[in-house]
Amino acid sequence: MSFVILVPLLPLLAAIIVVVGGHVSQDRSAKVGILPIITAFLGAIVTLALVSSQGPISVRFYEPASVANFALPMGFYIDRLSAVMMVLISGVGMIIYHYSVGYMYQDPAYRRYLALIGFTTFVLLCMVSSANLVMLFVFWQLLSYLLYLLAHNLTHAATLEGAFRTFTLLRVGDVAFLAGIVLAHSLYGTLEFQELFTRAADTPITLSLMPGVEVSGATAVTLLIFIGAMSKSAQFPLHIWLPRSLYAPTPVHALLHAGIVNAGGFLINRLAPLFGLSSTTLHVAFVVGTLTAVLGATMMLAQNDIKKTLGFSTIGQMGYMIMECGLGAFSLAVFHLIAHGLFKATVFLNCGNVIHKARQDPEFPHADPRAEEKEFSRLTWFTGFTTTLLIPLLILLVTHGVLRIPLLESQGTVIFLFFIWITSSQAILTLTRLRAVASWKVSSAMLLTLLFVVFIYLFAVESFTAFLYPNPEEVASYFQAADLPNWLFDGIVVMATLLTVLSWSYLYMRAHGQTVWVPGWVEGLRLRLYVLFMNRLYVDELYQTLGRIVMRVVHRIDKRDAGWSR
Image 1 (cartoon, rainbow, N blue to C red):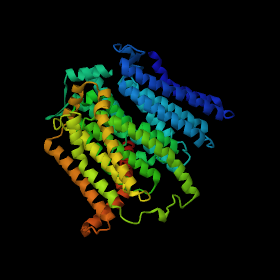
Image 2 (cartoon, helix red, strand yellow):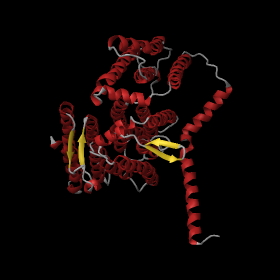
Image 3 (cartoon, helix red, strand yellow):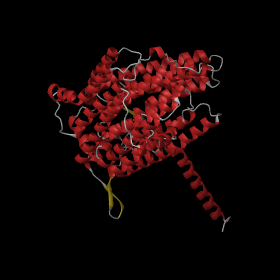
Image 4 (cartoon, rainbow, N blue to C red):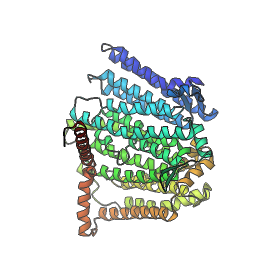
């Protein structure tokens, strides 16, 4: 079974083939280079089947008990989580590489670009299959450097500035991640995943930050590591590097938004037993993820550039992923990660075609006024409004009566049910914008969407959770650690429910042509908020101002030490 270590190495072979091929035969080398990546994808599928049936695969080129080998403990540990991520990364990498062969063939740095795609896929596969925290951090660091190189056109001033900002901000998270690794080793004496989880659970350690302020060792370690996850997954306020990296070629963004930004969610899931020991860290993750989801989605709606819109959409979705981790729904976060990765890779690859057509034809996309539905469709809105309001009752009956899932025993069950409702509501609401399609077809699509979302989420609750975390007691402990105070949890659910219902009512009335009375101060506030979110909360300007202040202070201190100033 040790052959599985070839799966991460095959994309590296593809990069070597492209580099060695030379300029004369670069087309042939590029087409040959895809074969190792296809083989890696097939190998990842075989690996997933082996791990599912025979258990985790561990291959180490060092002795864990030997301190002499601590400097570079290279090895592979592939469990179900790693195998799932390997299938996702190799599959997306294969499609992006194949797409790039035709998309970038006229670029002067064609060979370097394809080699970087292959090397990035290799780094991602090695990261998700790392045997310990040291190896994981090494490839985590390499990803940060690769994000700078993947900007590609570094002769362009805006591209270079965005790449430098990406590199700088990711250093913040990497330093915190490294500090968490050092602290974990000093507290528990190991960086091997399973041994670390066991020691952290068996020997609780309390650290005194200052007189009267104490924190558990698990909380201190996970908070530092979480900062690393925040930076890589573009969580607020460390999110500004992602919109500034949008000058890179479109296939790079397909790989970035489908694989690299998911690293934060993978890291938290890889260390789930450690994060499950700290309710504080999970609550912090919930707050950060929720704030990022709200701000990312809101800023997305105020953008007028297709790439920026997709970029802020990714930030919002990564916020949902981190929020799910903060709620203890680790398997739901991985499910979200996979669905978003496949969706966003597809959208970004098609985004290049849309941009190209828009440049050729300024009036693209075309709108046919005759195809617009002139009259308000009562059937469409009645179906969407009714099914959205009846979804909670439907889910309660299905889960409690058919699947025998006990309700209200933990917040975790309510979380899954609530996400089913919110997701299906968003999908159904999107369908109401269809005007060139018959009303009965739109209504049928709404009902099918409802059934599809309910089925998929129930699958995530039962099958996918049992697949990733076979021990029910472990899953229950994560939800218990993430439990919020009942009054707060109930308040959040009720508030989100009311906002969803009121939003549907507002849109229904506007579509029906009815006037909705809004106080004048609300309208003024809406315009101010629109400007604020259109300018991305002015966070970029704030960072620039803070940077200038820091540099001014540093220069003043430097001159004073050198005796240049009084």
